[in-house]
Length: 328
Image (tube, rainbow, N blue to C red; front, side, top):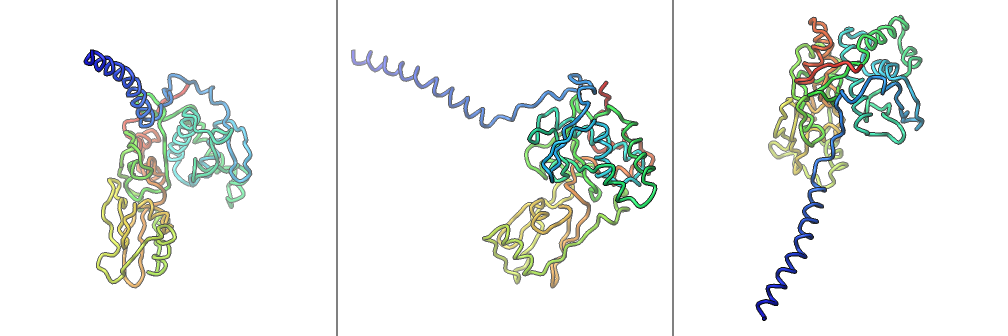
């Protein structure tokens, strides 16, 4: 009888524990699972679905509704110099349109808006009036060039395996673009692989230097990392430990700290994580490029256009194994 009682207790215990086990397992899987991917297939949409966009103006916190292609012209006006080749401007227009639709479809809303006007968050934007005020001459001719670039690509988006991509872009890669994971972490995306581009050295305005004294460098480090200690008499007190596939600094040792190259960019005000270090009395950061380095390089696009490449060729160069498709 005692054995039967024990047996019944074991059975009851198992029956009680199994639901708990699966509940815990389900909860853990929920916590660790990848977020649900939105349906980004272009077959699900027509271009008329995106007649207007809701733009958040970050300075005023106001939301403005703008026709999509008018908005894209204003993005190009803010993001790329108008004297770049027309094919480069077309490539930028498709990239900006793709990025915009990705934001809308994936539901990354800004309050009640689809996207904001900050380049630090989404993509830059400027009104026609504000842009023309900054041009000294040929104002309408320059604006017409931007309109031509957008009108020539109406409805076109960049896709990977039939889905709209997250079409990042930046000013200048310094010669090679970067894996997305080395900038923002997470997983790499198959269409955002490091890509080399010749001719970017022909844009010297994107080469820069930051020079700091040892005291200034230590102060900047302590501002970000309070427990920083540096013995400036120690050999290799500052040292690049590892590079990314895109030739940027992945890990940088400074005193007792090891930080990411992307962190160093923020700490020292560098325009790119593609840098070298020269240590003498002062510390000089010699920087190539401008921006995060992921996706389309605007100067790279202009360089390829000068070499005779069409805008779709430029796009498939920077966005690996992609296709440019038209939303009807």
